[in-house]
Length: 200
Ligand SMILES: [Fe+2]
Ligand SMILES: [Fe+2]
Image (cartoon, rainbow, N blue to C red; front, top):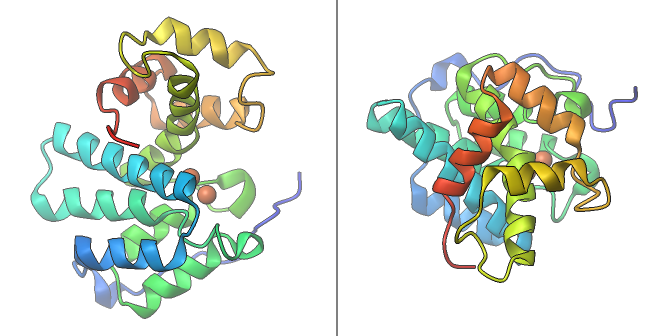
């Protein structure tokens, strides 16, 4: 297997920056500066929203919830302009902005097959778990007349088996991410449906 975007790096950010974050406003400004593709911007916001919702559900403190949100919100920030350098550009930028290394590590490990970095922390694993799956569920919502309304887990699962539907979404990655997170794919789908991001 070729690691198309292998980062060839094991350390991300600096220990000295533990506990340092950027504000939501600063993150949203970075997103709108870098990402001109509305669909991609929506995807990033959806993943940020899911990460935040999950961290809240786990009862984490505000600072941790914000870190999870930032990791989701910014994970694909460089994809629009520098797809060949995904995700090394955003990693460099967040290192430069002296952001908590755990956020950077989560972003670095959101595609182990591509970047060669293993998701280890819970935040890493959940970012990987929500990434492809949320895009898939969203694609399904767009083809349903009622969108997310009345969407059922079994409907999503049926589409997952239909290889021609949203063919670019890797079923292997979805299964692998679910396994690594220790959360069954059905539960992840349910979470994505319940915590949908309204208003595209
Ligand atoms: Fe990505
Ligand atoms: Fe993504």
